[in-house]
Image (cartoon, rainbow, N blue to C red):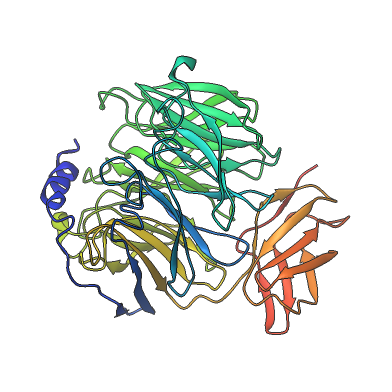
Amino acid sequence: MRSLRNACRRQLNWRNGAYALLLLSVTTMTALQAQTFTVLHSFDGTDGTSPASGLVQATNGDLYGTTLGGGLGESEGGDGTVFKITPGGTLTMLHSFDVTDGAGLQGGLVQATNGDLYGTAEAGGANDDGTVFKITLSGTLTTLYSFPQSSGDLANPTATLVQATNGDFYGATNFGNVETIFKITPGGTTTALNYISYGFASQALVQASNGLLYGTTWGGGNYTNCRYGCGSVYEITLSGTLTTLYSFDVTDGSDPVGLVQATNGDFYGTTANGGANDVGTVFKITPSGTLTTLHSFDCTDGCSPIAGLIQGTDGNLYGTTEFGGTGGGNGYGTVFEITPSGTLTTLHNFVGTDGYQPTGLVQATNGVFYGTTEAGGANGDGTVFSLSVGLGPFVETQTTLGKVGGAVKILGTDLTGATSVRFNGTPAVFKVMSSSSITATVPTGATTGFVTVVTPSGSLKSNTKFTVVP
């Protein structure tokens, strides 16, 4: 059932490293709106190779990411890096892994409420079974935990971490044929919470407005049409009680790769395979488990989305496909937009020189989308790119849930001189920390809704609703 995607991969693999031209800027016009696509950086090995996950915008306004290989590591080709890139495209390698502190960074980074970044390495560390680390915005790295294979299936973390409202981080490891969901405190105490046979976690868990965590497994679930299962969507409590909400059966997709909770309360995600043409889908699923297939890819509009979706400030969803596009099954991947009801528009077709195999998006507070490609670019080692579709600036709360009296960091652009912060209309006490960061206190009487910040340049609205919890 996955023959077309595998054929695409075989035909494309030989091209990695074959590019000599950096496409600095491509402007594409469509009937709907103008898009400006720009390659910000091409990796060259010394600063990393193959960024396999997306970016995160930190409170200083810069973007941070990881690479699978490259840098100055001891193993052949390097062991991966953590890098910083400004919205304008200036890249700085912050840390180069050397096996002893980790190797092979499959997942991305998350900024915690203490301001530091946290991430995982799939291998390396004291036992060569992977690590959890924290790194400051300036690049000082601390290994919090080295996974021991002797702890059963708790080894080889691959998914990006998420910090829950209790302050702990949640992630998943993939060892053998088992996905293990684990919790780790900011101090490094690690606990295995639950196990999924034949599951494989490739994306971060998401904490929903009800306080529960939701995730997907690549494999497991329904074994009727897939040897190792077609994948599932699950719900898990912060203490580890797991409930399977939905199991895919190939016709509606297989191998789901992440979720985002939209402002309407439903979750949206992608599957890397399956669907009407067996090259992936976009789906919607309610918190109770009712699934609707919104779109089946056919390679002309992309093949195999291997990253989840994000919801833009216009209410639409944005994502990437690993292959396909103008080249059909031989294409280099796409960036697409899809409405919550399922109307899909291709925004950019990669051509190789500007990257191929894109690995997800983030919308920065200036309104522009940023992403990475695992390969292609000037040196064949991957790229960082930006895509503007004309959306304006906004603010983002670093956590989307909180209690009255709790502190919330608000990320934005040009926040200096802000005169008001309101939680769904209720005024809050706040302090401007920098031009890109405000700290506010959730006010008494606040209810769930959007956060607004008034600046000398105008009023900025949060990209998602902030949920006030008991």
